[in-house]
Image 1 (cartoon, helix red, strand yellow):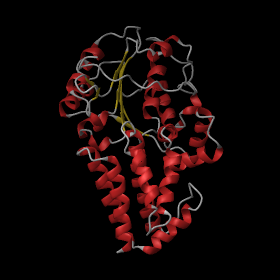
Image 2 (image 1 turned 135 degrees about the horizontal axis):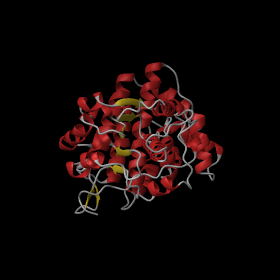
Image 3 (image 1 turned 180 degrees about the vertical axis):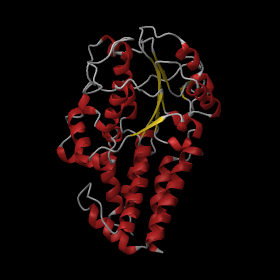
Length: 362
């Protein structure tokens, strides 16, 4: 893979029930059906909510649509394109001539994706869009992770947005649109996706991970807070087991089960268990933020594991809200430093919880 190549785009599920964003899909359908499709759409929302899925779903729909001069008798009911459709198959294989997929490029030297989208990744968008569609219809560009574009890459995309050729559409996917240039945002139609309802995420988990029992699926859905992608990732990474261990460590505060803490630290600190470490630290960071939110609102959230509500109520009563905000900030800072300066993962876990114990005893 050379520097200009991109990481393979996601392959979204074909089932129309897996989207759960009827309002956004309806907006795209109405614009397309009225022959007033805007040339650029900014699809936003939290991570794992289905933004890229919707973008590729719409790309398949547009590229499988009628040729120039044909009109739908009525607006289609959905964006669904069957998996056996030739357009679906070619897009899944990365071989459709009228679709260009862009993401962070691959760093050959470090053997991993770059941390940003550079100008080499987006070079050629203008030329691609100016060409006549290979199949006589539309030309589509999907930029997944548009907030990752550096200044030069963003300026290159801006040129394409300023002078869009006819029958072209750019789909920019972003979970942090505030990081985009204001001039890019102003040239796009904004399409925000809302978090899915807990029951929708649970239903998707049962469909995609049939081995999960009902309690695990519900727990994952609550932690994910409306993000199917996050729920599935947690299921793959053993998130429920790690969450139970987290609650087990917090339950005896201001005391700690030091033996259990060291055992957890040994496992998370092993070489090759970086995913487990990051999952645990994100869960810890998220739980303290949840504690602070509950203290500020005066309302306990639904339990994820038994006994969690009583634990949260007790901790809120032991310390003021400002002190728990300080715990969250201190813990987040430590976890951020673990990656930036390559701290030992076991020591990071030990330090976070021993510091918490010390603060609560003070």
